[in-house]
Image (cartoon, rainbow, N blue to C red; front, top):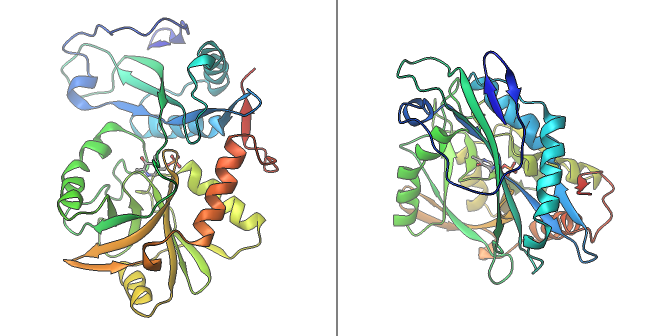
Length: 322
Ligand code: PMP
């Protein structure tokens, strides 16, 4: 689908995957005016195809677009086209446990213009790709490295938007995490480097003294759809869940005093990723003895069960492709 200032969004169409020709002066190459989304289609045991809360992805895409001065898309039109596209590709959706069809909607600025201003034209595209299981041998805890030099997103910046610059700005810190033998970065807030924001490409939850805590949306945290779903699920189970500020000191103290029962990340890729180790200023601490806790396991089973159509979808989250 294309956008021009004169005609708005127009010409939605489904075409075979192919290279894209863009003018070298296209504004996306120079100023990063782009937004994207990530979601998955799952094939159920009885051969139906389910998307998980796709309307939430398109709502978030528009939120990101607004921050990047990109015009809104009509979410109903886009969802209808996505439905047709996934239906066409149904046979490409793998069925093996943990696999799915990854869906990447994105918008790029296409106007050939070297001046610094919003583009007068855009392209919205959706690409699809089968993806393997995130966990090769069952759900397993990862280690995280607390980053105290770089920040993922500054308050007032683009952190709440799913836009390219937030991701390339994170590579240096990810390199440091890898060099320290940890899988993911734990990000702190940009002003005080004190409060926890999120983990790599996941939101984060801690269970301390029975309370399940996730950082309140600060304006620089990505509003994860899995995060939102986990909060709703926990509330439906009558478990105490709060969205509030949580400092790295509070987490370290809880680890020291054996009050941190579990920690896990949430996101489309892994669904739930237990956190088994935390590395902070050269010191390593184990969380839950590097084992998957019962809460993370229950959430993983429930969410993947709903996504694969095995568990009743009482919260009305799935969209059946027909
Ligand atoms: N934070 C960041 C920075 C991410 O890239 C993602 C993945 N989209 C998430 C959190 C989790 O969001 P979601 O649950 O919508 O996948």
